[in-house]
Length: 615
Ligand code: F6R
Image (cartoon, rainbow, N blue to C red; front, side, top):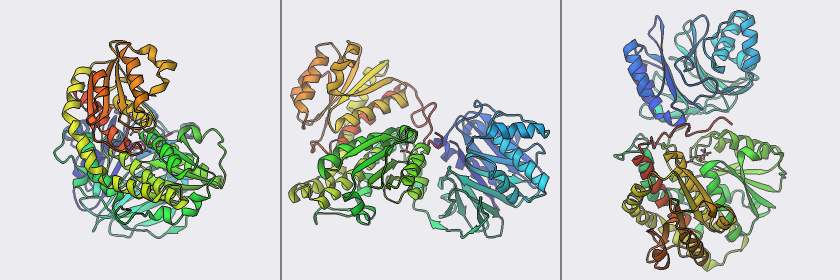
C-alpha cells in the first residue's frame, strides 16, 4: 500500500512528482523516494519518513533536475521503513529503476534464483527482486524494456502497480497493474502515471485507468500502447474525463483534512442523493438498483462485505434493510469471509462497501462471490476504482476525495446510499406503506440541514475533549441503529488518538464490560429519544451507580438523561432509522479534538494508510 507517481514530458518533473507524492501520502507515509533522469544520469534520493523529509534530502543531494521522474511514498510490507528499503529501486546494472505499490508473493524463490545467477541485493524488499528479474530477462533474451517487463510479470505472483524506467530508452516509462490501482494522465506532449488522479488533476482531466493484468508503454510524442500482460493482446486505450477538481483535494482553510471532511457532510450527503431522491414526487431512483431490481427482490438474502468503517455502515444497513425491505441480511468482514469457504449461491446478492474501492480483502471477497454465482453490487466512493469495476452494478457515494485517513464523510454518505437502497427495495416489495415511504423521503431530504445543526456541537465536543484527552480507555455504547455508531465512535477515537476504546451494544454491558466501569472510565452513550430510549436510560443508570463518567449524545430538549449524565451533547430529533447520520457527527468531532489535543497526526495516524491494498 503505497503511492506512486511518474512523469514524462517537457516540464521539470521534480515539482510534479513531489506535489503528487504529497497528495498520495494518504496511501502510506513511512518513507519516500524520487528518481530523476537528466539526460545523462539516473539520480535517486530516498529517505525514511515523509515526503517533506525527502524534499530536504533531494535538495541537499541535488536530485531535482530532469523532465522524466518517478516517486514513491511507502507503507512498508517487506522490510522495515528505512532509506535503503525506500523506492525507487535500481537494477544491478543501475540502468533500470522501478517504483512499486503491492506485494510480490513469490519473491523469495525468485531472489534465490537471481542470487545464484550473480545478482546482489541491497534492500529487504520484494521490489528489488522484481527490477532485477526484469533486468535478467532483458539481458538473457535481449528484449526491449516493455517486453522484458511483460515476461517478468508473467513469472510473479502477487499484486502490483509499477512504473519502470530504462536509461537505454529515456523517452519511455512502462507501467503495469494487477490488483493495485494505476491511472495515466494524458496531457499535450506529457504523461503522468499515478496511484490515483490527484497528482495530475491540475494538468489534465483526461485519464486512462489501467485494468488488472494490463501494461502500458508510455512514450513521448507517441500514442500510448496498452497490452494484456498474459496474452499480449492490444487493448484500445479508453480515455475518460475526470470528475474531481483541485479545490476538492485541498484543505480549504481547515487545519486538517479530517475536520474539512467532517464539515463537508451536509453538502456531500446532498450530492449523494442528488438526482436519486425526489422527495416531493415520492420517488427514489438509482440506476444500479433500477436495472437489477429483480435480483434484489428474488434474493434469498443479502450479504454485505466490507472492512473497518465501511463494515460499520454495513451493520447500519443490515438494520435498515431488514426493517424496511424485510430481506434477510448478513454482514461479514471481507477478510474473514474470503478465507472461510462461505456458502454463497446464485440466489444471494452481495453488497460490497468501500470508500477507496481498492481494499484488497473486499476485492478478493467480491471475486469469490462472483465465482460462486452471486450478483455483486458495489457501494464505492472513488469513481473508476477497482471495486467499482469489479462489481456487476453499483452506486457511487459521491462524497468527493476523502484524504484524512479516518473515514468520516465516507461513512455518512455510505449510510445515505444504503438507506435509499433499503427504501427503494421496500417500496418495490410493498413492505413499506406509501405514507411511511413518503415521510422517510422527506426526512432524508432535510438531513443535511440537521447534520449542519449537529455540527454546531463542535464547541461542546471540544470542551469535553479537553476533560478526557488523557483518559487511557473509553467505552462507547448504543442500541439498535446506534450500536454500529458506537463501534464507529470507538474506532475513530482509537485510530487517531491512540486511546484504547471499545464499542458495545448497551445491553451487553452487564455480560462483562461493566466490570471495567469505575470513576476513571469515560463512557460515551448514544441515547437519542427513539425506540430504545428507556432501555438506554436504564443502562446509563447502571453506569452511574458504578461512578462511570457519562458523556451522552441526546436529542435536543432531553431532560431525563441530562439529569444523569456528566455531559450531554444535543443533536436534532430524527426517526430512529436516520439517527446514525446525526449521532455520528459529535463522535467524529470528539475524537478529532482529543487527537489534536494529544498532539497526534490526525490526518495520517501512525501505522495506518488510507487505502489498504494489501491483505
Ligand atoms: C477507518 C477507516 C478504515 C476503512 C477500511 C476500509 O476510519 O478508514 O477502517 O474504513 O480500511 O476501507 P474502504 O472503505 O476504502 O474499503
